[in-house]
Image (cartoon, rainbow, N blue to C red; front, side, top):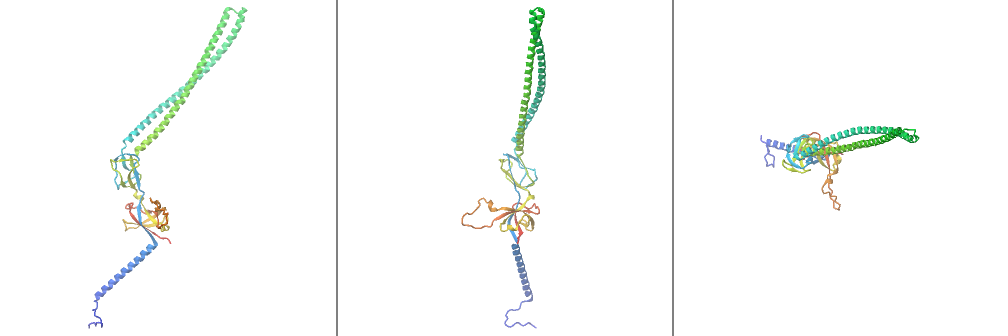
Amino acid sequence: MAEQQPSGSTEPPLPASRRRSVSAGNLLVLAVTVAGTLWALWWLHDRFTHVYVLDARISADMILLSSEVSGWIVEVPVAESDRVRRGDVLLRIDDRTAAARRAELAAALAALDADIVTAAARVALTAQRSVSHLDAARSRLEAARSLLAAAAGDLEVAAADWQRAGPLRERNLLSQQQFEEIRNVFRHAEQVERQRTAEVATARADLAEAEADAAEVAVREAELAALRQRRIMAEHQLAQAEAALAHHTIHAPADGVIDALFVDPGEHVAASQRVLLMHDPAQVHVKANVKETDVRHLEPGQSLTLRVDAYPDRTRGGTVRRIGDATTGQFALLPNPNPSGNFTKITQRLEVTIDLDEVDPLLKPGMMVEVKFARRS
């Protein structure tokens, strides 16, 4: 029996399949609405309970290498993005002039060493000779003094005999021959005494000469000391020349990667001119500028959540290493103390350094990072 249409209705009834389609669509809309509402509630809760810093960046301790000498670049064995080890050669500067200077100073140092050896030998020889001469001169002086004393004694006896001989001869108690013999003995004793006196004077002169030789030893020792001081100065000059020669080759100060080269082979560099930039990929970290109103939620050692924009499908962990002691505005080239009455308050930011829990070679300095941490009640 056919269904009867309700009175007053002009629309035909919907088929059963159409009614089921409408019901499924309503359920889908309802599910999407509920899911969106739940997501919105979660998002609002997450924003109220956590702090997000969206302008953080991967950072590293960038090493800027400069030339310590001027000269022409003869070799650059590395290229940008090359990985190097500590001690690897990064750049060579023409070192022919520095090498010649070092060789010249090395030859001068060798000549000084030879002069020192010669001077030391002269000191030893002079000292030995002066000691022997001094001993011999003293011995001769003592011998001369002894002979002089003996001659003086003989002269005294001869003088006494001569004084007695005169009166005895006047009384004819001595013969003329005996008188003359006594006189000759006296005169001979006088001559011997004068000779011994001269010998003592000569021995004293020899002793003075030997003592002068001993003083010459001190002079030669002073010359030797001066030569040794000159050698010390020459050693310092040689060390400076060796350092200058070593500065013509630039080595990697640490393991790392070459970020930028500012020179090419054949160019002339000046002292203190920068030549390349590098960093250690194993020492990267995150620098985040956190609002001063959110810094109270941070402390050193606190764990954070990081998400790198280049790899958004992975969440990384980090730890706060340091919280800056001054706002970034204090380092501006043109600080604005705003002494006038017009004032617009702007929230300042403090730099926070964050260490990564895991080293990832994919992270490059300058990459954008999103930092997330919980608010404290």
